[in-house]
Image 1: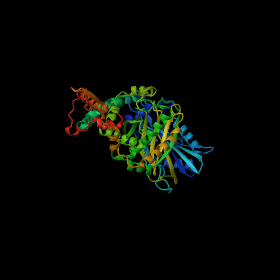
Image 2 (image 1 turned 135 degrees about the vertical axis):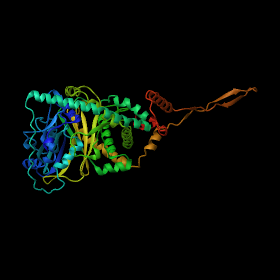
Image 3 (image 1 turned 30 degrees about the vertical axis):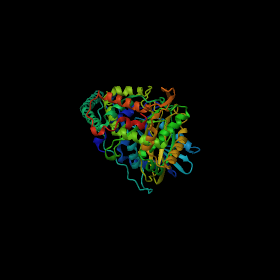
Image 4 (image 1 turned 180 degrees about the vertical axis):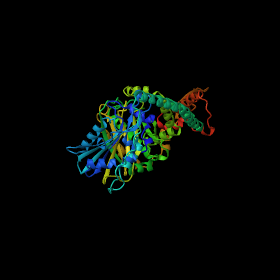
Length: 557
């Protein structure tokens, strides 16, 4: 690390995660790993210290300016000591439940901001000759994708233990001003420069995103975008676990073989991420039913983080992501139909540029003065704001075994932080042929979080059984479900008197009753057309045959 790299400003996205943190709501990402054999703390600390030159951010701390006038700075910790970051606990009984309890204790505490925002906790005394290792890092330093990149740096692809070179000496730190007035003036100047830079780039960023949205509209999605606006701004319907988080945190774990996930994808279509979302949605449905929630017409609003790193680069630390909010129906018990709907919904939302719209909204929020953000954000997390029901992140990890000091990594359960009314979130990390699922929840919001482990198993088994049956055809199923045959009234006979006094029967004309669904569909289409007259856009005539009603009919909207 050169001297010029020792002081760098945080991005707004990274800073926002620092603002979000409050008592009872630590904003850390973590993973609990199980390794073969016994790992000694001293040897582990020495090994990790020898790798830190590959990730210099691990020796830097976040330094806030006075009055939050500008973005914080990453600066080298002058008192860095590896012993402050590698800890050890010893269990008495050594069960898996003991490991979960210890992991929950670690993630429920906040990291010391006077030092780099990460630590490693070795959990000794596990049964079956295992060692638990809890990796924890503040969300301001990394997101899930870059966290996997850090894992690849700290761990080895071979069980062979090589002699490590001595840690490199850091370049001399750039001297900082010592005079209080000079420090304040420097921070004011940085704040002004940051504001001007943001003001100059904001217009271009908005125009670029607007071009993409308009391009999507001219490709036949104008009506779809208008139809989406009410959904995106409407608060989500609360579920039993949507309560304000005050801590401490609890966790639950599950596993799904990657081979079976791929088999479901091949049999039913969609993507592997669609399969994961289907399992999570069905698990939440079962949990809600367990708590007596009436699910008819209800939806689950999931927020899916999307990596926006160019070319899949995971070496860049920090947060490079946007979000995709998706409403999925909770009243669809047939797993293959639910998978089909989720696949169509995700493809549709991506196609009309919803992630870009969310990114534009975040960019606009970032222009709010930083002192206001620093004071307002922690307060907002304690208000009853129901923006979503749950965050679900799916991060692809290494598919080959990894080793720490020659000890093989057996399992790795991820954790994503909770906050606000997101009383439970879920993270999925694939490693060496298995998708490891980690539920993280607030103790008051989800006191029975362990129930998710059983429900996840039942849901995944149900989807596997359904996929093994005859292939599911979304087109035929949707047509059979929506097809409403005309209802013909019974023919009534009446008599008409004749001149001879005899009665001659006469058949009445048959009448056909049009189904109500067709009339409702026409009314919805007319409503959308009236809304479009307020937003005149050039629409591609070739795309007009595909109406928003047809696109959204199978999604429950």
